[in-house]
Length: 304
Image (cartoon, rainbow, N blue to C red; front, side):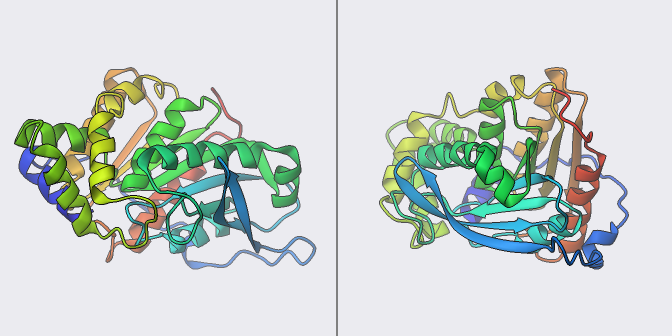
């Protein structure tokens, strides 16, 4: 979301998150031992959500036991899918579910931000179904959401609305409510929709069906008050949260989110700033290392 990032760079300015020393986990560079009885696998399937069948992939870790599972959420429109991160997470012994939201990249239905939020909830519910959990070797009590850019917003909202989600991780999160609020403050109520629509159009909506940049802008502006990290942070006060930012203009949002969580009493916030672009183009190993180290530090059973 380069234009959104630029707008926030102008409106909010830059701030630096806490840097953390990292070691490269072995799962970033080394394949695990082969389990011939229950090998690592990949399953493709359609994930039901509100009458649509979403295109989904499950990266299943080796071993017969139920595995903790990450739901990996892509951004807007979803050019960077972070599937190298998915593979690294699987090598570390976690399952990873990746899917395309309704109306995105060939998934049936109409794309909207509200539909994305519903799709995240549907994905969590799907993994909790006993038959699905057994088939995909999922520990239904250990589901973690991790999202990039717009997927970071979906991660925050999904975790806030579902107390059973163990933890959340956001990577350069794009807060749709804050973006819309900033546009209204910067351009006024009458001009904000067209300005935001132009911004979204430049991101490229060709992979998205059933929407226009104008419809998405109107939706975000209409929901800007409720789609706020400040409100969501209060419901995440007892759960681990990972916040990763970069030099992409969205760091101020990420820093504000981390600070809001701490202000609301969350003592389980880990934040990290990497000197790279929005896609983490030259910091993929550092990104994988940060995520895997954080996952490894989570308690083995959900504590909330």
